[in-house]
Amino acid sequence: MTRAKGYHSQLALGYEAAYGTTPADVKGYNMPFNQSKIGIKQNLIESSTIRGRRDKEQPAIGNIDVSGSITLPVDQIGIGYWLAAMFGSPATTGSGDPYTHVFKVTDGQPSLVLEQQYPDIATYETFNGCKINKFSFTYGGDTELTAQMELLGAQRTVNTTPFTANLTEVPLVKYNNFQGSLEEGGAPLAIVTEANLQVDFGLDGNSYAIGSGGCRTALPEGTLQVSGNIKAFFEDAVLLNKAINNTKTSLNFKFTNGTHSLGFFMEEVVLQQTSPGIEDEKGIIINLPFKAFYSSGAGGSILVATLVNSYAIS
Image (tube, rainbow, N blue to C red; front, side, top):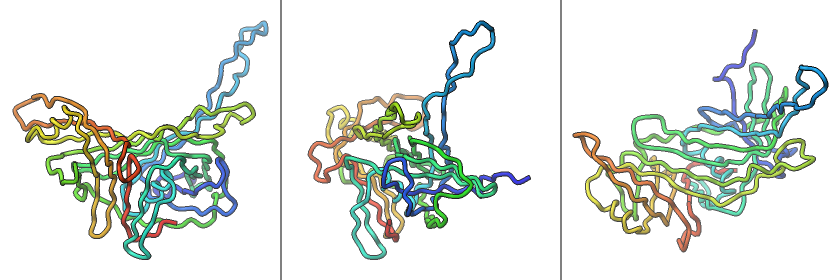
């Protein structure tokens, strides 16, 4: 008996013109991924109806919750399509290698059609009205460099054919932890052992309405929040004093491979006060949580993501 196999499965992405609807002429992309756990939940609601016997009546069904997570490699090309899903189309310069794509916060986010494809058994799980609600990654150490996304969506259908017959293959060119760097206040910070970034897009997932068939009618955007943590060797009190004095600084998380790079620049950041503590006889590490904000930064965005690669995102 044929069974669906993980290595033969695919994750397809397309952009919707109207929320919750697959366009007739949608362009689909075969995205690199490590795990895709998009799913559907629909509660069965216990019946309290009394009919003169002990047996329970048939339960009612609740609203549909399409949600889940995707783990993806931090790479040079595929990440551009996910950034476009978070921030909209980038401002792109260059007519060939290298292209420079700049993403900034806008008032809206595109909605996506995402499909978990199981070609072994000709089954295609299509999710419409998807938006990225959270994005995060951690770098440093000696592990595979990945990012995590949490998504919300409107509805799921299960089909015997894919939402588009021809998928554009997205090349995979990964970044590695050793290609990462961190700048603080415009200068390289060489004492950091680990750093993480968390972006919360603040989507309103409680947009159910009468007559919508139990599906989310929209995913309105809320205030975008950017935070994270820096883990560093405790060599001096420079960063600690900036936290103590609530001194505004900047942070730039960056990955570089030759002429290509991926950067997440936060122009206005404050560090949170902490204490390093003394755990044992070894070197002391200090954790410095941070929050980014936008007040008067020249970039005009709480976060500016810049992707320099060999690929025209279309």
